Length: 380
Image (tube, rainbow, N blue to C red; front, side, top):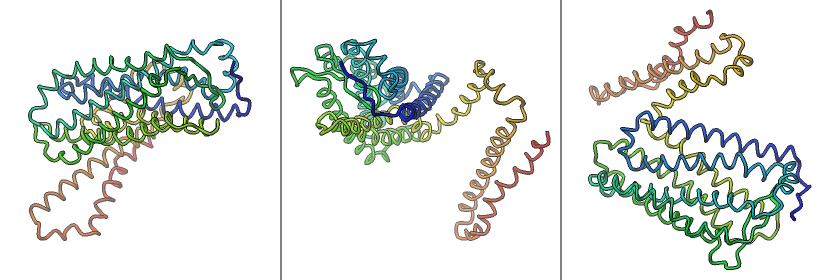
C-alpha cells in the first residue's frame, strides 16, 4: 500500500489547490455564460455547425471542471486527505471508473475540436456550399466523437492499477502487460492526430480566410479567428501530453514536474475557449453583460451574503457610477470615431484637421464630460 508523502507543507498544497479552484470556477462561469447566450439565440447560432460543435465541447469542459474540482485535484494536492483516502480506498482498482471517465472526456474533447477545425477549413475553402452539407453531417460527427474513444479507453479495465505519489497526495495510474493497448499509448495517438489535423486546418484557414464570401462573412471570420487562437493552446497542451506519456522521468520530482505541467496545459484548454469566444465574437460579447445582469438579479441565494458585505446601497453606488461612466465615455468615443471617418471621406487631402493636438482633445473630452453628468451620483 502506498504511503503518503510527508515532505509537503499542508498550507502550500492547499494554496495550490485553491489557485486551481479559482481559475476553474472562472472557467465554469464563462462556459455557463456562453451556453446561456446560445440558449437565448439558438435559432440564430444553430445555423453555424462550428457553434453546434463548440456547444458540445463546452458541456464536456464543464464536466471536466466539476470532476477535477470535486475529486481529482483534492486527492492530488491536499496532504491531510491522503491517509484518509488510502484507508477508504485500499485497492487502486476502485479508481478505474474515475480514470476511465477522465480520459474519455479528454479524448472526446480532442476529437470534437478536430472536427471544429475541419469545419473552419471547409468554410474558407468552399464558403458557398458548406451550410446544407455540414448541417446533415454534424449529428454523425458528434456520435462518432462520443463512440470512437471507447476503442482505447476500455483497456483501462484490463490494466493493473497503482497509486503514484504526487505533491502532497497521490494520482491513479494503470499498467498493462501488453504495452500496445495502454491508455497512455492511445492518448498519444489521439493527441498526434489532433495536432496534425489542427496544424493543417489552421494553415488552410490563415491562407484562405480572405476568400470567405457569405451573408455572414464577419461572423465566419470571427469564428475562424477564434478557432486559430484555440488551436495554439491545443498544440501546446497536446505536445506536453505526448512528451509526458513518452518520456521516462529520472526521479519522482521530475515526474511530478512534467505531470503538473501537462495537467496545467490541459487546464488551459478547459478554461480559455469561452474567453476567446467572447473576446473575438461580437455577437456573443454583446449579450454577455445581459447575462451578468440576469445573474445578479435572480441569484437570490446570494442575498444573505451580500447583506452582510454591503449593509447599505450606498456601498454599491461607486460600482454603478463607474459602470455608467464607462458606457457614456464609450458612446462619446464612438461618436468621434465616426466623425473622423466622415472627415476622411469628405476632405481626404485636408486631413491635417485631425492634428495631434486635436486628437488629444478628442481623447480627453469623452473622459471628462461624463464626470459632469454623473458627479451628482455622489450627492445622493
